[in-house]
Amino acid sequence: MVQIAHVCLSDLHLGSSTGLLTPQEEDDLADPARVLSKAVAAALTATVVTLSAGSKPGLILLGDVLDLSLGTMPKASAAAVQVLADLAGPAPSTRFGQVYFVPGNHDHELWTAQRYQTYAPSALSFPHTTRAFDAPDRMAGSTLLNGILTAAGLPASVTYYPNLGLRTSDGDRVVLFHHGHYVEGMYSAMSSVLAAAGASAGLPNTLERLEQVNASWIDFIWSTIGDNGLLGSDATLVYDYLMTGSESPLFQQRLANALASALFSGLPLPKTIAARDLLGLMSAGLVDGAFGSLGQLERFSYMSVLQGSTIAGLSKYLSGPTMAQILSENGAVPKDFTFIFGHTHKPFADRLPVPGYVGAPAIYNTGGWILDTPMFGTCEGASIVFIDTDLNVASLRLFTVPNDDLPSGKTTPTGPIVQTADGCTIGNAMSQALEAVLTKPGIAGLWDAVAKAADAAYRATQDRLMARLRAADLKASQTGTAI
Image (cartoon, rainbow, N blue to C red; front, side, top):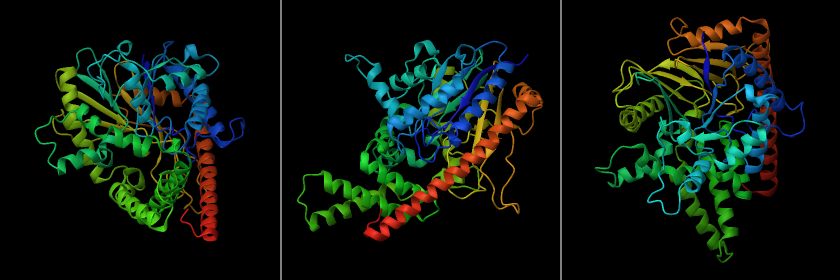
């Protein structure tokens, strides 16, 4: 009998104003975010209980669980307690066992904090990465996240970064989890700067080196803005403008203005026009250099699951530093390799050839629980990935972005679809078990309710986003400011 060993969720973006699971009012049970959270918990509980054979599967939180860039820590934490408490349910002892946390770019700050909490003052080094295949009892966890999990009634977590690995006893089958930010060049920008300066010649291509060079960059840009008061609010509004499909130069101009304003008011400089203009020029240069290609990120390519540059980046990440980690810890390249990531918010399952691996590795993306653009009809959506005790992998696609281009004006929400990297369930025990469970009327109806709740959450989030931007435009026209 097939038995679920792990359930993987990613990109919940709790705390973000455009996160589908972030409620506007914490105590409003009719809020679309709360309805969606309750629906997911009910459907997932029924599925896990049916396929876990009385055991407690692990819960893998694959990054961007908290959105510390587009949301404040209090808001993100409060939303996380609610959503995770829904998942725990009234009897958490029968739901999940070990919780695994693999930080993403939006909650990377939790990993930075954990690094300094884990090691003694006498430690000779504070490693930037962990081993991927070590047993959970050898790993430490995030103090903040574990406080949230405890409040939600779930077990404490252990952190793996940037990769978490599962393997069979012979090492021939490996499933590797990574949030996904390092498959895009933007998140390793400092490595590119050093390479251009000739400072990387002869250095090993390792995960430790990759993270050491880029960790502060990731924290600064994607994991701390929400904690920066007025600047955080302005930057979030600017980010909202980018999501509407505005050109990148508009985004850069508004962010540069926000940065210059914060610096002008916060630095001990003479409050003169010359000083303000100088800060404006400096901020524009910084933003242009740092964000010039932000609009080209994978999450802003709405109509294809992966751009060519991201496919190349994925191959580079897997064949380079990740391959080195696998060889070091596993001793050999596995005969059967699966890579699971999130980050892009566009779920899919496929096989992609990667140099150095046997055959074409199976690649799964979990999608995301957030509205990235008010435009509907994109290929975004969310999946939950299930892994059984034999490390068979299957993805349950839960919902997609609504499509308002249909003649009816609204689409009927699409229910759950089982997906595999091979495009069929033949030979995949996990996917066959999921399909069998979905034939049960009670469980199928619960997942249909998830799709309907997601549709309502998308529409409510779109309405709020557009109202916020209209209000900001009105303010800008009245005050003459950029934001």
